Image 1 (cartoon, rainbow, N blue to C red):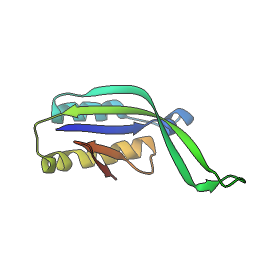
Image 2 (cartoon, rainbow, N blue to C red; image 1 turned 90 degrees about the vertical axis):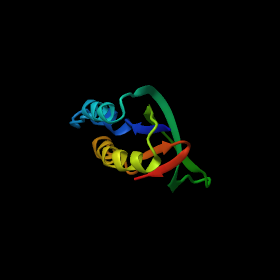
Image 3 (cartoon, helix red, strand yellow; image 1 turned 90 degrees about the horizontal axis):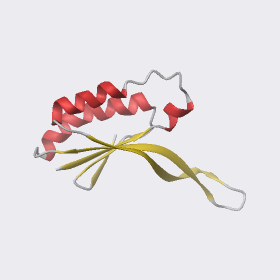
Length: 110
């Protein structure tokens, strides 16, 4: 199984006073799954549907994202039981409104 966790770092970069503990979450994932690959500094684009320009266009926003990738032979049920609490911690640490992770190309949102 392939797991991808999208770690949006935009808020961390905006406010350096945030006490972010992502290294401990990486260690937690390593202890649970035995391996972790980090794909750094990706760009995520999204449409902000809450804002519309005077010409009727929605604004496109940009985020700085790291993708944390894991491969495992565990079942989806086992992955979800282990990953959900960690993903919630990532969401809180990074001040995301929604946390995305993907298991074998199926998206999960918290």
